[in-house]
Every structure is written in structure tokens, then in C-alpha cells.
Image (cartoon, rainbow, N blue to C red):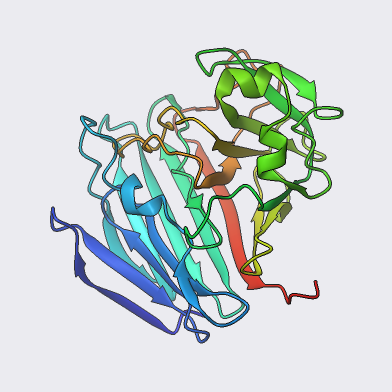
Amino acid sequence: MTNRITGCLLEPDDSRLFTLENAGGMAVTISERGGVLRSWRTPDRYGRMADVLLGGRDVAGGPPGAAPAARWQGRQAGGGVAMLLTSPSGRGDHRLDYRLDDDGSLTIDHHASARSPATLESAPHPCFNLNGGSTDVGDHMLRIGADYYVEIDGAGTPVGVATVGGTPFDFRQPAPIGARLSWPDSQTGTAGGFDHRFFVRGHYTGGQGALREAASVLDPGSGRCLRMYTTEAAVAFWAGKRRAMPEPVLAGASSAPALGPDVFRLGPDALPNLASVAWPKVVLQAGTVYRQTTVYRLSVQDQGG
């Protein structure tokens, strides 16, 4: 459980920063500016602390020239922190609940409701480097439990679904991110790396399911291991040698900035049934409620494995 919650630090625009701490000394900071994660300090196998959420230092501010991030309303709730936002268009409300447990699990519950038809927009996905930024993420070992991924065109627009077999997108067994980036492939060439959605195994037709492990990443050097569990149908993964396009985020929040090869981005993604005329978008009808839970769990693996 979260042992301590603080909310006294301020952003330059006076948005508050809330920090959750557990019994092991792990600390996660969330900002009212954009409602995003700002840092996640955690030990490696030798007990050395580092911030593994490098992208969070920039995400809350957004890229140069971007509209200011929405001011969420943060408060302590249920042993964690709740972030509340009313859509600037007045079409609906969003709530993100963060809770940090002693086993290193950060649980994020996303709740959205619509007063009129609106496209569901995802919360910003965290940008990680499990070695704390001492090197890039090329040797990070990634596993994604997905048999299919969504192909994109040069503008990043989804154009179809393909099997991962025989492609650099096959992470059904752990593989180093850097080595897969070097594979010749039209899709990674188009995106400058990985900037794609993966269907979580068993959910090819879209729709949510029980909370289950969808992906994991291991940094062999530090021993830090990140596991992601989600109720969503898909996982969004980004890593590349060139800068990514800004990521769509919740209405009123700043876009995620373009980032270089020093981080990877991993998060849940909502996908409707493939027969939906709105595919790949999810449309919330008036009076409907969307709920999704994602858990990021950070642990340490001994050098022997």
C-alpha cells in the first residue's frame, strides 16, 4: 500500500505535484499539469536509486509551441491520488486514479463518461528507460503477448492488421529492442522504428478482458524488470532511432513530445470490434461509461536470472 502521499511541490504554473511512496522507498510523482506521471524512482539490483521515467520530465510540458496542458484537479483518494478533468468541449469527464503498492505495482484506473458522442482519447503513455538514462534502451529485452499488430501508413494512420510472425514485431519471446530496430522492414522504415499497436493475445476482435499480463521489459544491466497488466484489448509500443510524432492524449492535455532513442513508450490502447465503421477509433455514446485498469509493476531480477 502507499505509505505516504505528499502534494506540496509545485510546477512553474502552480500545478501541484503528488508523490506516492511505498515501504521499499519507491516513489512515483504525478502532476496536475496534464494528469501525467512525472517520475518513478526505484532501486536496481544493487539498491541504487534512479528515475526510470525519463520522458515524464518533458511530457507534462509538451513540445515547443504546443497548447498548454489542461489543469487537472488532484486530490488524495482511497490510499492514492485521483486526477479529475472535465473535457474542454463539455462532452464528458475523465478520472485517473493512481495507487502504489509495496510489491512495486502502480495501478492506474481510467474512468471516462460522455454526455454526447465523443471519440475516446487515451491517457498519455509513460516513457521509460530502465537503466535511468545511463545508456539507451537497445539492450532492453521486450516481450509482448500479441499475435497481430496494426500496420500504418506514412502519416501514422492505421491501414490494416498483420500477423507478427516472421517480422520484427514478433515479441512473443523476449528480444532486444535495439536488434529488432535493425531488421529491414517496411513498417519500421515508415515509422522510423516502432510506433504501433499490438492486439493482446485472445483479443484480436477488440474489446476488453480480465486484467492480465500483456508485456514485460527487462534491463539486463540494472536488473530492473517492468511488467504491464491491462484489461484493454491492445498495447501501444514506441521505440526508434528517429523522433516520434506527438502522441494523441486526453482532450485538453499536452501532446507527448518527440523523443529520441533513449526511451521506450508502453501503454494500453482501446480498440473496437474490427467490423466497427469507426475502426480504429472508439466512440463513446451519450450516457456511456468507459473503464480501464492498467498496472505497471517494477521489480528487480538477480544477476543469475
